[in-house]
Image 1: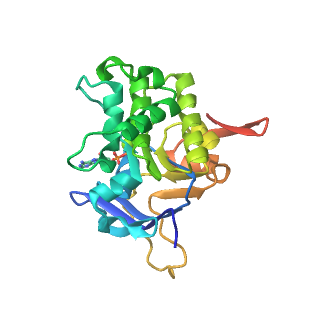
Image 2: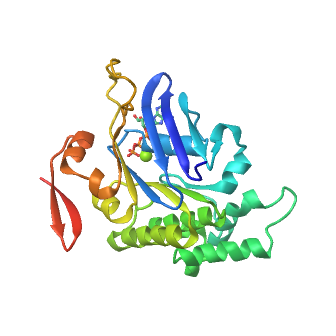
Image 3: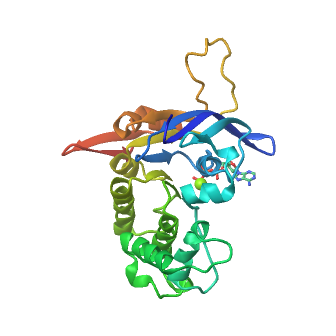
Length: 273
Ligand SMILES: Nc1ncnc2c1ncn2[C@@H]1O[C@H](COP(=O)(O)OP(=O)(O)OP(=O)(O)O)[C@@H](O)[C@H]1O
Ligand SMILES: [Mg+2]
């Protein structure tokens, strides 16, 4: 039985409008998987079906051998941390209080956070390099610092799976790389499986074990004369190791734009033409 995430023939629609169709993915335990694709292709939607926030129209999501729709929200929260896209909070809590809310799935209904909860919260802040922000009001830190704090909050859940929706948005050039290196550390050291969305193909190339390259659903159904041996991948252009997926041809198919692949010291960079 797989201990990662299996997505089987998943489809999703908002108000009858199909967004995702024919998605088959197998995510290995401990890997970093990056989802990449044009605005509106359904990355956030797909991420939200993985932790049960959205219910698929068809197909299933199996996490650690169990169907996600058979798990309760607290069970899911003990297993999966989620940092949504563009998180904002207007409550003037301290950074530590915000990170402590990540401990809620582990705290029984009638108790307050204990010493161990505070320890885990502080360790999580240290792990993302935000230990110095502990006592600052969350409303008075920068967008990039908030991003780090939200990742620390998800880590304080001690999740096996971490879902990050655009973890590098709002970050400066250096901090984008800082966050991605932290994500790598979390996956390598803590054995956490990370599924994240990114917009920079070069970040996807450099920091992923596997890449899912998505495109917008074109509305066309499979031709119907197949024998079932080729899975229909309406959204998924390619899935696999970054060097195999991030080719100019696949990028062209996903975004409809031309790019050139440059190799330098064993690293690959995609440049728009
Ligand atoms: N609550 C909603 N109700 C109706 N349509 C929605 C809803 N949320 C998203 N959509 C639509 O579903 C499609 C996919 O949205 P989604 O947010 O998953 O895209 P995305 O790939 O994450 O895009 P981005 O890169 O801009 O974050 C878009 O066309 C969007 O307009
Ligand atoms: Mg999104």
